[in-house]
Image (cartoon, rainbow, N blue to C red):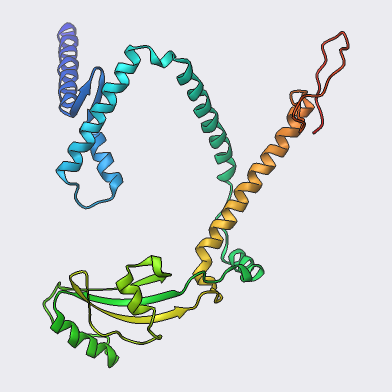
Length: 290
């Protein structure tokens, strides 16, 4: 009985192992030597694109690129290029950069997002830095291929009606808001219209790029005009985070300078050539000064 049970367990494990291997092999989309590209890896790549649907052509291109890169990589290994002096030097540089970045990242983890109060204080202290470099326009637009319905919409917008003003075919109207900063931020045909408008003004129906457009100017800020806190909140937040990172790096380096000087492992000179050190007849180490 005992022998029969053991035989049954061994058979079960063998069958189970074969099944898992078959399932795993069915996941393989491409193989070069021992390296395999699986369907789950492709699914992860598709998810990283954050798109509702990935065209088959894009998926095929991704697989082809993987195969081509793997072929070239494995051929390089066969030719012994992983021991090439140039490659070894580049790997050392990359490793140094990665290790330094990782070390500093551990310092950055302690950096908190700047508070609303800190952002406002920074803005108040540096308000003169924040002006519009170009003419800045906030524009609402309506776009459609149906000119007649867009004409009626424009008439309703001028009257101030904000609901139920589209009488054309459903799904044929696009409406939104855009921020324009200078002529280079949009096409000339749009800029030439909206840059001449006053706040609250509604344009006539314009034919641009095979569509009909209506524009309404929501806000206008002239070049050199003071920006508001909301206009620059994200920029200030980025500045404060970068400042905190720079401080973290400076503090880390300062502590390391003290540590390595104390242990006699640091020599630091700002001169282009090392100063002459008198022979003492015994092993000596310079440990100081800039």
